[in-house]
Image (cartoon, rainbow, N blue to C red; front, side, top):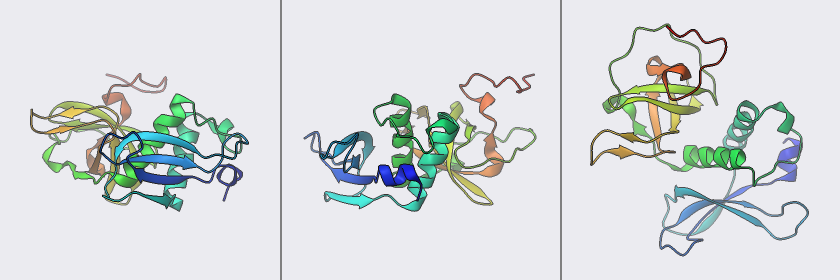
Length: 195
């Protein structure tokens, strides 16, 4: 357990916090910035369960959170007090909640034909693009094995009026269908080669 994890023991709360009639996933910190009361960070992720409860973060949740912090914000946050009111940190928490709670869709029916590109090795937390029938969509890799990756969408995917995947929905994508992020809606890195 890292120093940051000891400082911020996080839990998931599945409950209707806003009184909307729909249970959502929230992040609970027992204390924050020296205050003895808990801090509650609601997300837009719907609860997969019908009863309210608290669930401790798994090792996978914590690992993904710190990998994304490192890749999206930088090394300087590891070991430091984390500002949970920072919009970038809140986005990372949404991605972790989506990866944990949203049932993934098999991407085969939304993918376009594979492109003849040189395949790259990808790692957990990498920003990637997915070639869908609705165009290239940006996503983050949140789980990875030798064949497939669980990706969290960072932009909506609208195939038709009935079939829409929103931001933070999850897809299981075969690794050969994952493209560099420059194919998606991102600014290319300086070392990227664009033809």
